Length: 118
Image (cartoon, rainbow, N blue to C red; front, side):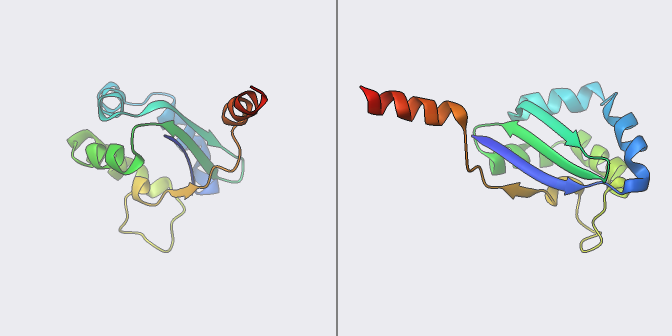
């Protein structure tokens, strides 16, 4: 499963967000891997737009596995003040991700074209 999601970092806190993600805690990295997050990347725009991409077996399941870890609770608490989430201040940042619909994938379409050509 490929998942893309978006969120928003407060524009005035972008440098702090970058600093924290330049040195993610080793135990957080291990927890993500153990929970099934693969090929996980975050992309940050100058306006605070945050786009994430992850490959996993099931997005709800990997998020649930992370929610069970103590390190995730600490990380989310550390990161919460950096996000621009005025509608839901009680929500952990990773609970506010808006999943985007995949509308094109090159490999899928090439495979379909090859199968049709046979």
